[in-house]
Image (cartoon, rainbow, N blue to C red; front, side, top):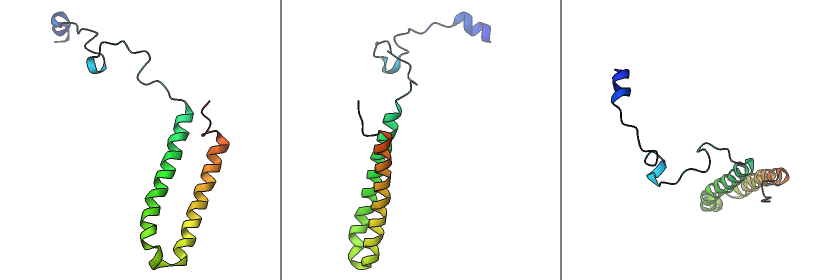
Length: 96
């Protein structure tokens, strides 16, 4: 079966097998590595995104819960500040 397939198969046009059939030859491999700076930038973005995810519900219930909710939010923001200082020292905010 394999030999019959190889003997009768029609070769695919290389321009039609490229992604999106754009006809452009790729400049680099699709699995090329990104610089570690992009991973740090995405982690910083996710940290601030999660911060807002926690702050919206907190703003709704802070009046009902009282001072303990304010203390918990300051502890959370302190932990976030430690993460931002670490990212700063690692160079996540340098773009050159």
